[in-house]
Amino acid sequence: MTIRIGAEHPPIIRTVLIPNNTQASRLKGGLLATILVLTSLTVLAYGIDYLGFRYRVASNRQPFGSVTVQSYYAVGQKSGKTEYLFNPPRAQTCIHAVFSHAGYAPCWYLSRHSEQRTDI
Image 1 (cartoon, rainbow, N blue to C red):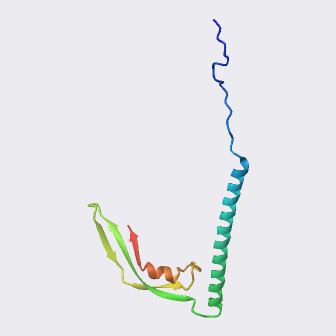
Image 2: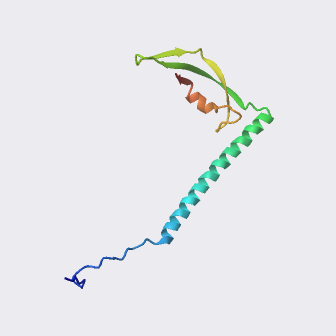
Image 3: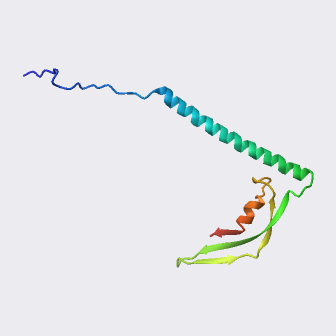
């Protein structure tokens, strides 16, 4: 017995449409350009902020500030409860800048996060 594949049977191999490669390359190029612009703007903003900080340090124009910080320890116990051990409030040095420089946090950040919790 022979089986003939004729016009009454659909073809096994069908045409597959492949998306246009120029659209995909335009999308990749646009995404790459957006990432490059955002990275460049961030580096530029950090550089300008750093130069402003260095100028304030060199000209002694009060680059540093102080914020009172309350720190405490949260100690987890075996019973599932948490014990809090508070330290006395202390003044912490900060800088008047947008970003962190020279190992100090910005004053705007410390004033909003004046409670510092350490989990143990």
